[in-house]
Length: 284
Image 1: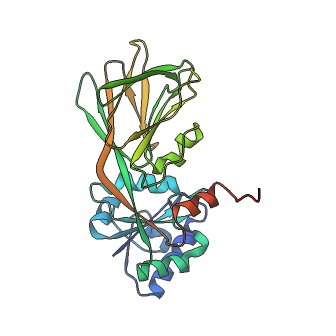
Image 2 (image 1 turned 180 degrees about the vertical axis):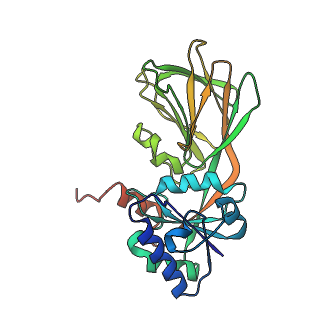
Image 3 (image 1 turned 180 degrees about the horizontal axis):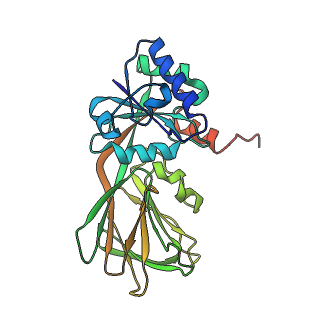
């Protein structure tokens, strides 16, 4: 069964959803539509994202990378294959563009796509008072100074061993999937999806020798605010913000959860990089 979730606020969402659903009907493919997506196709549905995940083996996400990140947060414990169709601008996580709907439906009909397993991060916020909270990130966990104009001092340990104190606007702890997002903008490296590691990238560090650190995905990163008079903010895949005080700690490690991300055989990750980053060869 195919589930369909769209970014309903995109200007061309109605047109794309209708075209996609009509193409599914043309090929005799059954689909369940998300409760907010169905009206765009002139249909009714009461399915939430979590309910679609329980019923479907493939979820088609019509939107951009941000839509996929949001949907992953909403799917719950079960993560079916996510097949992205891009209605955005960049689209590192999507298979095809909105102008390639017939090709997308053919791939779904014939199961002509590869699975790229994408690990998630498990971020556990342990406050000094109160209950711990656990969040999961496909892209990254970001610790930021928030609205303060002052740099925040963040103490980082790896496996219980001190790494350093960062005086910076913040830190990005990114998966290979997230290495092409905020971490890249902050000067971090690009990690291949199967690299088996993640990266810690400081945001505008005060010390020039503070650079990105690539660590094995068996490592546990612990982040604390080093000064008692400071607070930081924690965000997981840009989905809301949570406070981190000096007495609290944030523990980040690889999750057991893995997202099966659909990719086309003729468009491997290296091809996606060349297209999205506009890389080219050299005659020199």
